[in-house]
Image (cartoon, rainbow, N blue to C red; front, side, top):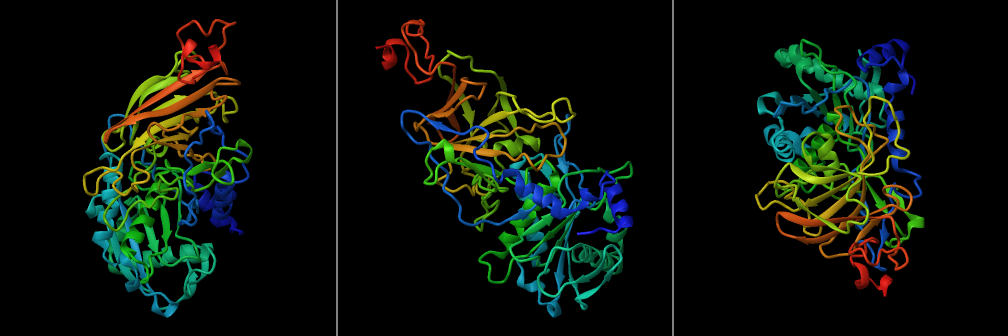
Length: 500
């Protein structure tokens, strides 16, 4: 896709860069899909002890693809700064009505604007622990905008054709919709037209290309100036069809994902490590599946359901968004030879300080010395569906509730937009009293981290961590006489068959 030089220059200024390539959504999407593709194994492939298999997440056959797309303009970074309890987000959502183009707004559940935005606002209020708010008077659904001509020439990107679903995601069609929305505001809501640049986000609901649920500006290359004016932060969302079982729910889910992308602090591809063709633990066939994390709405989890339940972001995403905090910093701990050290991990629905973050080997971490604070780390969290209707994780399926989740994520809560090429990776979902998960070489060659899920309640999980540099204990080196579990098999000295 070629962008005219003048347009590229203008877009580059909005994007805080003068590189035309930085505003090509096709290039960005290619980068996103490349992030997890082609990896022979996850960064820390799981290994199973005692011949037992780590429970594998069931493969999801199909899921809504979220395109993490067009970088023209930019979105306001929604970073929770020190001393600030909450952030208020504002948005304009436009519903289009174009029967002559093969699309009728009444076929979509988005027609009930206040109900739609109430669901979106409830999601962020709940999952951010009250840190993010979408006030109803600053989050409006507008229209329907009646399109009488399906084609024309827009002032921003030129010619467009909107006959039925957008045939391809071209700038003419995408920005033609935005031009039409602005013209509608100018005629029907001049008050909003004058104030449009003071709204954080704009969403255009119109059927996109086949199989595309949404296309969003991602991240925040430029924030507002002293006047509060920000670049246009745009989303294009396909509204649900009349045949959809719950069109309003589908529309709310698409808008929630768009807002998560707009934050710039949630990865667009919550991924999952999968080992073995049959779901086993064969390390030779480990791979990373993009969008494969069933515990995260940027994976395969649906953020809302028809019963009003929600599934909040996984611990790594909540951490980089500034919503959840680690219980305590763990760097190089526990010490080798300590045996299994217990930690009481609260369910994420009970408190915002709720997960373990363990800094491990930093070998190969990128951008050393740059302003980005990368750190290889393992996240251990506990998720239970809240008993409060509509509460935190109430949409989590019973098969996934009451489990411990282990992720690797190498990005930090440094307040900078995330690198989409470094998604969080789900390593394992653990059952209480189930097998131990071992991450070999986590702290370096021959220096492993072991994680086991001992017991649980409706609010807390007991998780034990162990670090070892010895594969087995033996009499000759004295490890059979030191009262320590040196090899992290749960046995000490002569209770360990290695010492008998």
